[in-house]
Image (cartoon, one colour):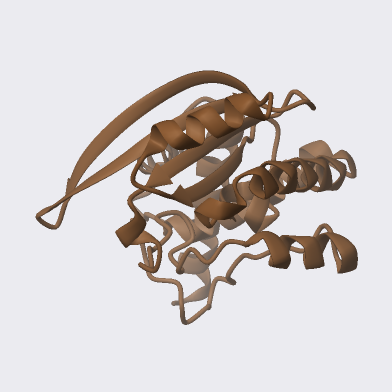
Length: 215
């Protein structure tokens, strides 16, 4: 890629990231298309390129408070994961990545075939459940079910707990934003991070071999 092309891609990615950060667009695809329209360009950056620029925009606008928010949200995630330890909880999303920004929530995945059992456990543990929702998605011919539990943490942070079928526990899923595999953090891993490097980040670089191109 020549210098001019790289510069244009970076500029479009930055514009798309700015649109996303300030809530002018909600989805990456639409943000990229809007950015090309604003800049009069036909170059579409990858989702990874936009995500890295979005991380930079958040850092510039939020400063040191961003890391403080991240650590608080990771600690809050751990408390809920301990409650759900029998269901193989995994911390994913921006709180795992270390890319939280204003408006971010805590994303947890758990694996069980009876979501109501998890709802009952949360209620018995005095966790404030705001909403519940079931979804079914047909992916590559498979009908995948998930149950979403929306929670308000004691800190006021929002949390989404996604209950997936037990058979999906060992499956690897690609991240549509960063393009790499979603690894996340389990309880012991998160405890170790909080002890040793509580603001550690888990994001691929622009040239990461594990990231694929998404447009």
